[in-house]
Length: 100
Image 1 (cartoon, helix red, strand yellow):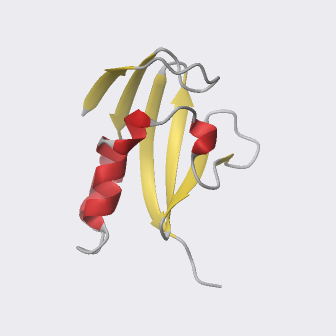
Image 2 (image 1 turned 90 degrees about the vertical axis):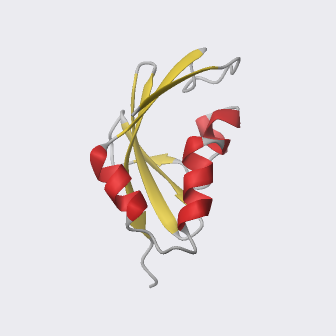
Image 3 (image 1 turned 180 degrees about the horizontal axis):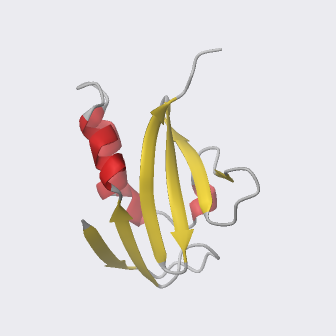
């Protein structure tokens, strides 16, 4: 599924024309969420995400290791992993945060 949304954001990581993709594994993860969590995550990734000014506004946004293209952020009790290459942001995984 590809979604292109115009944006007037000036942040380094969100170009003026942003293409968002959803990996098949991400969609499988999304469908596997508990029914009480599914609507919140779905609302964010398919709606609220496009209203953001910069990716750095995401909760706990940080690169995965020393990667320059793979990042993660948290939403409720889940990690959401994304890949950023040029003007394409690809949602890769939704993983539950472990209680330690």
